[in-house]
Length: 83
Image (cartoon, rainbow, N blue to C red; front, side, top):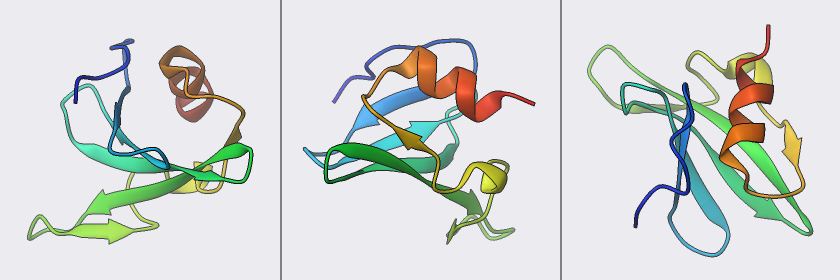
């Protein structure tokens, strides 16, 4: 599938009706948005030294469980990358 948008920073790639992958500007996975009821919840992921996905890790760990009402790449990027 093609990304919804490519804002500076993060891009979203829907995987199915309930999961959307989130990638940084370099194309590395930083998490997933999972549809839970009526909202989308961010689940952070990182990469281990050997390149394996590490649930709950990575550079956006502090944003784990952030809630979004819709899949909007600009809003997701702004909120997840906010200091």
